[in-house]
Every structure is written in C-alpha cells, then in structure tokens.
Image (cartoon, rainbow, N blue to C red; front, side):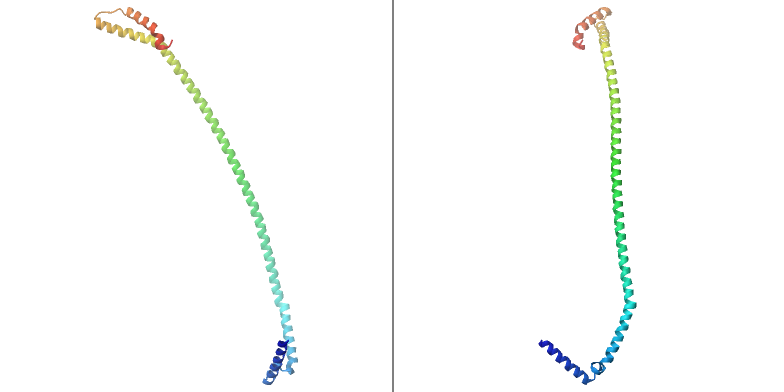
Length: 191
C-alpha cells in the first residue's frame, strides 16, 4: 500500500510539473480532444485491420492449413501406395524364389535321371565287355594247353635234333608231351 501511495504522489507531482513546463498532452484542458482523436484514430485503425489486413491474414492461414492438410493426405496416400508396392515386390521375390527352387529341383532331378541312365548304360557296357573278355579268356584257356603242347612238341623236336643230330619222330614226342600235360593239367589250369 505504501508503494501505491508513493506512485500516486509521484504521478500527480509529475503532472503538475508537466503542466507548468508546458506539456499540452498532460494538460487536463486538452484531454477531451485527445480522447476524441484517439478514438477516431484507433477506430480507423481497427476498421483497416478488421476489413483489409486480418481477412488477408486469415485467408493465408486457411490456405496454409489446407495446403498442409493436402500435403499430409498426399504423403499418407503415397506411404500406403509404397507399402502396397513393397508387398507386391515381396510377393514377386517370394514367387521368384519358389520358381527358382522349382527349376533347380527339376534340373537336379533331370540331371540325376541322366546320370542314372548313363550309369546304367555304362554298367551294361562294362558288363558286356567283362563277359566278352571272360569268354575270350575261357577260349584262350581252352586252347592254351593245345598250343602249349604244340610249342612243347616243336621245341623238343628241335632240341633233340640239335642234340642228337638226327631226325626224331615227332609223333613219339607228341605222345610224351600229351601224357605229361594230362597228368599236370589240373595243377596249371585248375581243372
């Protein structure tokens, strides 16, 4: 309360000092005209602001607000479209992976079939070759004692002719070789 009293005393002394010094705006005689012109000025200012400036500001604010809403809606729409595109791409990728896996499995199966067919063909050819070779071996085995006997008879005849110096009877040598080969045939040929 003391402050309020001090303030009022200070203001009244300032007004009295201003009146004496010649400040007309503080002179109470001119206050009515000052209030009149103040009202006129502020009324004109109010009319100008309310009729011309504030509507432009309101229009700009509304335009900005609508533009922001449009941008937000467009961004949301694009986000949804991009999510749909991402889902489509993921589906395409999954489908491609499945197709690739299917193609790989088919190629694998085809390759395995080809390998098995070639393996069977090779085994068949090898088996035929083995049978042919075994048949040849058996044929050679069957003819071997006869050939060996023939070679033995010829060799023995030549040796005896060189040793004795006279003609030797090849039939007697052949009989001896045949006899020996019959006795030892089981030992050499497993018969």
